[in-house]
Image (cartoon, rainbow, N blue to C red):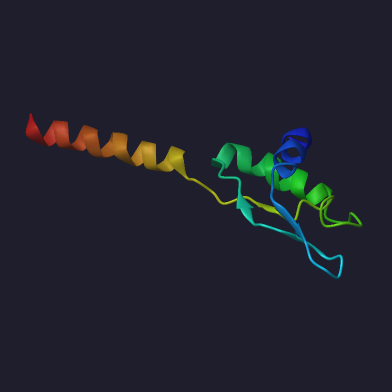
Length: 85
């Protein structure tokens, strides 16, 4: 997961300000609940790095709760078909 996050961070746009400060765009890496744990642990493992680029400051991990939504949809479909029958 660390290699994946490192590869993704290489694609984050970077702007270097006139004073030499690096500013990264904030790019969401939308993951499901199963991948979230690995991504958060990988991100946490580089939090003490000396530079912003090595801390992957351009990435954040919002949760796309696809599994729960899919489960909810399947329950709704079952209930609709049972009620219709």
